[in-house]
Image: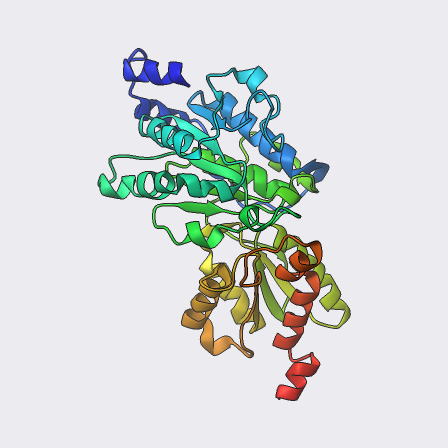
Length: 377
């Protein structure tokens, strides 16, 4: 990385770093058309999807580099960067000390000079050490420079609760970063999401917060030949309807999409046809897809692992009340994490986060199929 920066600062290439970055972007499509799982050919884990996306983007654009704790010699705390050090060398796969504020700041500075850093936080709980660089440096520079400065940087890593890691390592930061103008916030669920959204994030001219889930890394999903193509890319700000339905809309992101899909299968046995929306993007939020679904189903259940107050579900609820209130046949149901720091004890931890049965009960309440709803009517 240092060599690349020195080269750009000295003007050795004869082309500005910003110009070079723009030229590289023109050679590749920014986003492919929205595609389904047509002609699924193989299974791929989310870990491999992220790794392959990084590899392909680094191969396509010499401005892309990876920086973070243990990303090189150890090949990543979760092996997302496996093999990249051997392939691209220590100037593009940079191991750092335990100093999030330090390497996040270096990353933002390199992005000012036209490089495309991918900054890995071992967990987004540690991003709090670097919050000033993410918010005040990365997110605001384009606006404060009247559009003269782009900050093409990606902050990525596991977000939200894992298992048995306590209150300081279990928080979901979707609502935190989703509230900040200047940031884009992506939340992949499947391997298709992971590949397509990470590629989009790296190619984007603005800072992107990329919130993964540790418990999804080892999960396998079907991927098509289109998804495996090196040009594959998903549009930022567009949700995906994972399951069509007509009785109730369920919105979810990251790991909760899987829970919502399992809940929908259970609900189907009781005659409730649920539509499941994978948000994919928190900022920008695909309000059009959400509202169109609610106008069809007339009911809404939001699901998230973050705290309920000022959460993503609350924002979705506000959007629906503002745009589609007349279509609602029942109160909106919000399913979220408990409003407490995450307990360490396994039994309490389970109670602190949404479970499949919670989603089922909420959907039944919205459809007036539960005893509580019957009594209320």
